Length: 88
Image 1: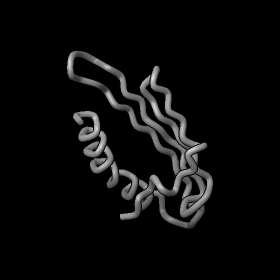
Image 2: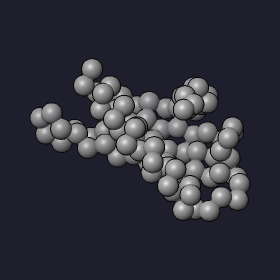
Image 3: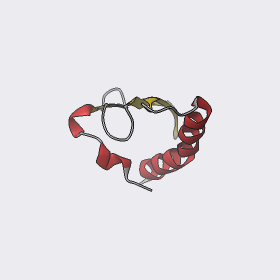
């Protein structure tokens, strides 16, 4: 897999430590557009709610069900990496 972090311009990534959120926008590269982010909301001792949002435009004639499958397929890896990092 490619390291997608290398494809983002750091100026387009915003971290807000007070609100526990990260947002990004990317309008070049393999995708025509990718906007998204996540928010971590503390719930109770040792538990948090993570809300992840992504909106992509491929810029190609790809059926939406294929885009959805690829996007949803990457979510388990994303959350496993996030969980690992939060526990470190």
